[in-house]
Figure 1: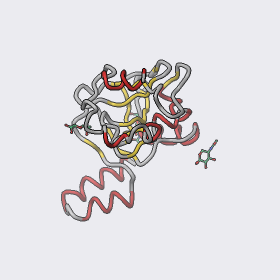
Figure 2 (figure 1 turned 30 degrees about the vertical axis):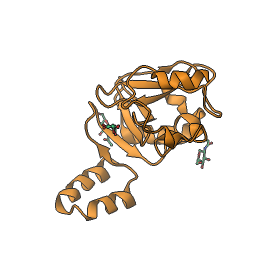
Figure 3 (figure 1 turned 90 degrees about the vertical axis):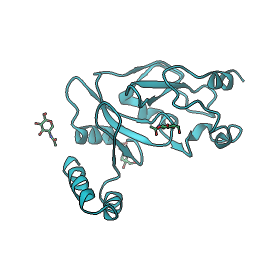
Amino acid sequence: MQRIMDRCERLFLISLALCPLYMLLSCECRKVNGYRFPVYTTAFCPRNETEWEKRASLLNCTSDSSYACLPNENITELLEFCFPQQVISIQKGVCLFLAKERSNLGYVECNYFESGCPTIPYKGSTVYNYPSCISIGNGCFLAEQTYIACESWFGLRPRPLHNKTPDFFQHLATA
Ligand SMILES: *[C@@H]1O[C@H](CO)[C@@H](O)[C@H](O)[C@H]1NC(C)=O
Ligand SMILES: *[C@@H]1O[C@H](CO)[C@@H](O)[C@H](O)[C@H]1NC(C)=O
Ligand SMILES: *[C@@H]1O[C@H](CO)[C@@H](O)[C@H](O)[C@H]1NC(C)=O
């Protein structure tokens, strides 16, 4: 994967027009800048342990980091990265995202989701057990899609979300 991405970058210098197409065809991934460690977009996160291990080994994380696949802070893209922490412990009732500014993990309280909000504490490495946390579209988690038209309050959601649950989510959670 690294080699493909390196080639992408080299090709990018040669042809601005061709490279996006090349990347689209050869790797679902695109390196995104602005984070403190390498971060790549992906069309979907691994859906089970087998897929997880496969993707994790491609990213080649060091022993003091762990492979993670989570939405970005605006819930508009899924990101793959090595997070500089061996284990990502997550409390119940939340989904994580990667915040850009400090490249730390933020969370969304998800008890207003239609379904699939984790009911027990879990680890970043088993997030595939909670597809609701990693299934996104139109800047929303799919599990919140039908919630009073997520897209209409798209503009209302504070961006970036930062570490705390915004009042808006609090409001939704208790509604
Ligand atoms: C993991 O998911 C892939 C794709 O959906 C599937 O082909 C594979 O059989 C699954 N593996 C396990 C162990 O469930
Ligand atoms: C993965 O990391 C190890 C240790 O840094 C290195 O030896 C190896 O070449 C890397 N593999 C790839 C595919 O980048
Ligand atoms: C999230 O949206 C805000 C406002 O549009 C933007 O400034 C920020 O760069 C976006 N973050 C990401 C990771 O795309």
